[in-house]
Length: 124
Image 1 (cartoon, one colour):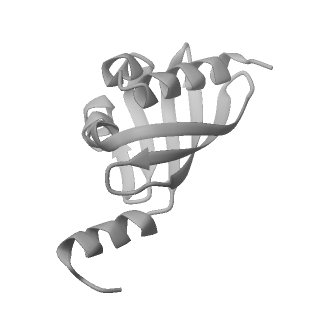
Image 2 (cartoon, rainbow, N blue to C red):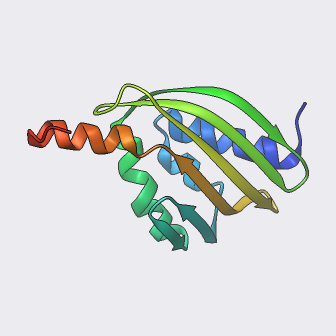
């Protein structure tokens, strides 16, 4: 099944996981509000600064599930990155007029913390 919000969410997801971050940004509203594990971000440029670097270390992604209706979509996926082989995440997206106006990202930060500690030679 597809829906307007799910179509946008999947297009956005395919773009950023396919290494076409500029295309992904075409689905993002200028005034996006993004809720991240580190706190909220406002505006497309703040979002670009948060998400852009992550896409640069991304090596793969598997979409696990996707649901949506007229204005809301929920995606769950697993990502592989240079420092972390498996990093599950989920996104709740609100879409208006074909653009993502709000995005709530949930992911497990523990694998990234462990990778940083290992790279620094710190035992956990």
